[in-house]
Length: 326
Ligand code: NAD
Ligand code: UDP
Image (cartoon, rainbow, N blue to C red; front, side, top):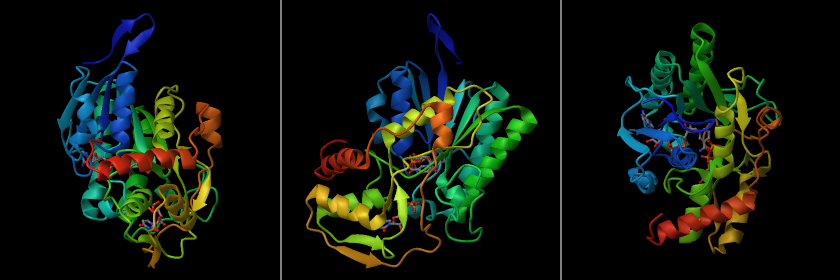
């Protein structure tokens, strides 16, 4: 069912979130429901889980559907947030062919749906489209430096092809698109075994095992807290049809991975030792978003500092590991 007016000037929309049972998707579903919308959450539960949206299941405006976005989907909706795709290197390299299919066939199917019903559609793209960047910090005009045949290519090139499809559906068919380039984000409901650096380090620190630093730890990332990220996504979706992006959404405060390890050890009071492991191939050496465009276009910038965000994420994993419900 498409939108209905719920009060003066306010419109309840029917919103599809693909990958809605994942880390970011579950927070997005929550925020959309809090704004009074109808939410259809589509997921094949490859990396996400019902548990992430358990608290939403009793809400009559929430619907959970098991579906793989590489197959067509017929629904009537006003807006689509296309998040379905494994996001951590360990998960997306597990079945790389399926990763590319999810990005590319998933984009084609969701864009086809948007075209048929006239919905707005936002793509969860990624800083990985910049590859191992030779321009720093990364601005949206930078075309990137991606190895097309490496082990990260299934994700990087899949997401780049999805961006191409979004812009071609926009130019060729007039589909209302928004392309958001997400930089490393952390927070509650990250998968404890997804191999991403924040979850790995926190779980290792809390369980007292060695902290695995890949390379010499001098590579950099910039970590955004999930609430800031979702705020950016919602603001972007609410912009006019002329705002298509791509727009970087991330926290421009950059840290080395060694600094992150030391901060997590300090914040958890852990006795874990840092051990060095080989740097995986094509691992980007530096990454930091230039968010000028997001500031100017969306009036958005992150509000949660790294230490504050990590405190929430540590608390989440502490509860999870002690067996308490998440
Ligand atoms: P996640 O793995 O927690 O969520 C992805 C969700 O997509 C999972 O619930 C998974 O089951 C689902 N999914 C995977 N393949 C599917 C398919 N074929 N059909 C239906 N559902 C499928 O990851 P996340 O961190 O929440 O990432 C969400 C999106 O944001 C992804 O598209 C990712 O590329 C993008 N992104 C995330 C980050 C980050 O730091 N978290 C950074 C850049 C981009
Ligand atoms: N990393 C690390 N130890 C780990 C996991 C990751 O040193 O246990 C490093 C990884 O090599 C990369 C950075 O942390 O340089 C971020 O990795 P992540 O997998 O979180 O995301 P990426 O930004 O590489 O996609």
